[in-house]
Image 1: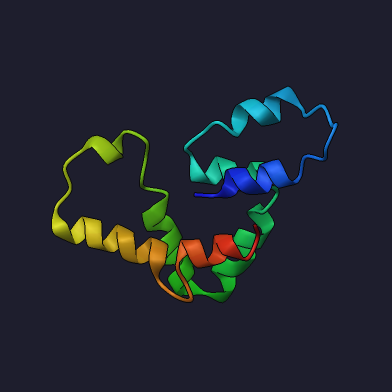
Image 2: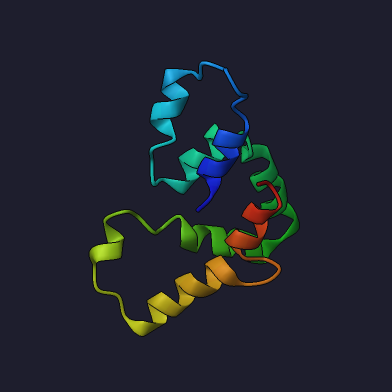
Length: 99
């Protein structure tokens, strides 16, 4: 996901970025990346307005760097794909609002 683009965008040219923030941005943990990019409040507000987004977010954060190497059944794969790509409530649609 392009949370890393949001983090990079927040760093100005010639800035010396905070090392902890840089190190944390190398995560594949979507929840952590949203916090680092300062969009946690936006995410929570969206969840309160859009229960489909809340459901999709919960599916999406179940993904992990390790899970991409595990076998999934077709239903689980379709569920994750829908959670990410659904318009207008999917996770990618929300991310695109902030990059």
